[in-house]
View 1 (cartoon, chains in turn brown, yellow):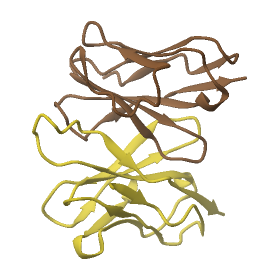
View 2 (cartoon, rainbow over the protein chains, first blue to last red):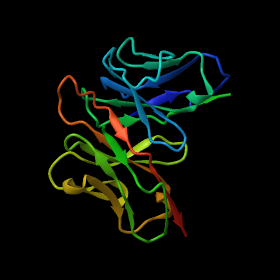
View 3 (cartoon, chains in turn cyan, green):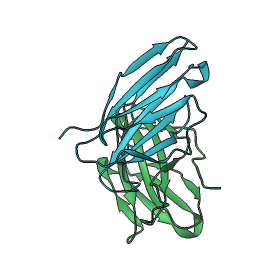
View 4 (cartoon, rainbow over the protein chains, first blue to last red):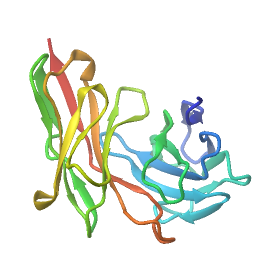
Length: 114
Length: 118
């Protein structure tokens, strides 16, 4: 079956611009996670959705970052006033179980802020 | 604080040689344990996981890992490495329990890059 998909695969933007990154989880998966992977590092947790609500957003670095999941399926990560330090690979993962660490990852979106 | 340490940033082995990648964790209780592999430009693929039971777990692609509670370790091994195993490997931990406070978020190590010499 189809896995987690993320679009775009690559995004180049200028400093100060707004970007949206999309995640399509595996069908029927109620839990959705966003992680950020900086160069040479492991992924770091950003936010967790259970259904439509953000159950844990403790990993969002500041208020420029925001994510939504309005219908409990597709999620969008939004970054305002991008900074060069936001350059990273943004990974999305989904799980069929509430609060389960067993997650299925998408291929990621590589964001480059120039 | 919860953390995962992968002491080896980069490892080079010859094709056919054995491999061991180290992982140590710091956690309040025994967490769920995972190893993922990431090839260039690809997402994370789950190699194996430990939840409970036998402390030696088998995964895909001929990998295995052993959980050692006394050492807070979960080292990954493979008896004979293939050139296609060259990739980055991540150890990760996740909280146990199904309570409402458990979000399932994973904590990752910084990764070990494996290079395979022909």
